[in-house]
Length: 269
Image (tube, rainbow, N blue to C red; front, side, top):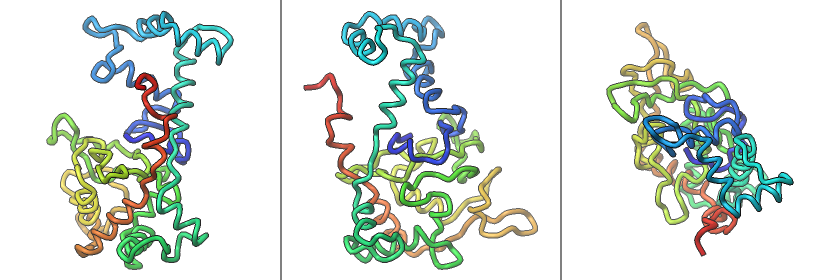
């Protein structure tokens, strides 16, 4: 999951299923996960305490922790605080969307720095389906474009390990900012199971929600409720509207987070 602008989301829960109740709680869980960074203590793997000892024996970490805390002691709580503060620093607010909003002072009118397709995409994003839009704004609110609180499943239910095994409990998503980098390469794959590799695949999913095996689908994605239950959203976007929506989403990419040395690898000259 992309970490951009996590400090500006309404929710304080993290991971796709929101199992971590704070960013501090989240940041060390991937380190302890046996299949991620591996400090799990499982099957002969090093423990998290082994990592703390390794960090404590590293000269520059002794200097850095002493500078911040007044002594060189490295604990999980201190590691959580430092990592979460770094993650909170990863901010992107220099996109073409921000430039357009600054120029107009209002997210509604056409932005002067957008072309016709991008402004059409902005309309589709910010307008509900009953008013001719795609309704994306119902879940992802500008200017941050983070997911709202109390949103249910988005209809992508296959697990990453087995597409025939379903998980309906994924309700969290990152901001829609910086879906692509400035060169046009997607910062993906998308969705909790990495099932989409293009923005078009994402738009196609929301354009026509398949109700097969669905449970806990957010009611915002219902087209209607029939005698046999909910009917998935059918936006019937034209091909040009799909392109316009994608072009708008691309305007949410900034530049600073890709070039600013404060987010670069400190071990590379």
